[in-house]
Image 1: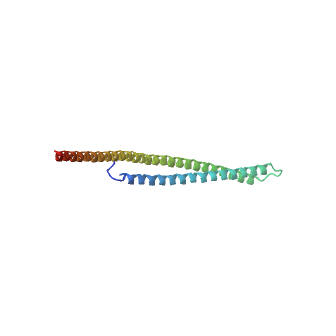
Image 2: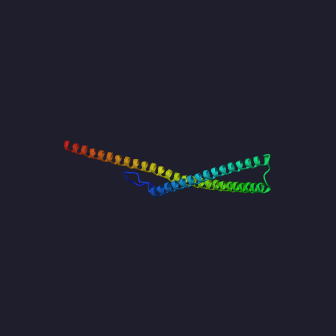
Image 3: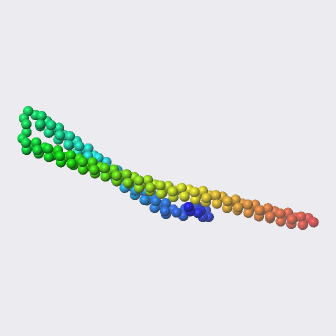
Length: 166
């Protein structure tokens, strides 16, 4: 905790540290936003792939249920294509999971940066309160000093008048 210093204005001694914490928080916020955006893009890609897969599967089902059966090579070709699409969807799901983990890591890091900044801000407020108390005490001491000087000068004047009268 920093100590307050005498002065007309409050000057926080850890101001540069607070500025650094603000900058780091903003940078982390940008990283988190980027991770969130990346996750959103990956989820959209996954949805697109699943839709494409569903369309292809319905096409294959229509092809097989038609009155005219396709050749074996055509069926095998479509089977291979379906397998590749399933693999791609699975890979995309893995990518989405990794993106979620990355986003969660960035979120935890952001929370940590916010906590660090809050600690410094609380210290600043506590230091400001201490400074205010210190300055109020100095002001009251100064006013007490003025009052005692005025009282002493009045006493000296009263004694001088009494001596003149005698």
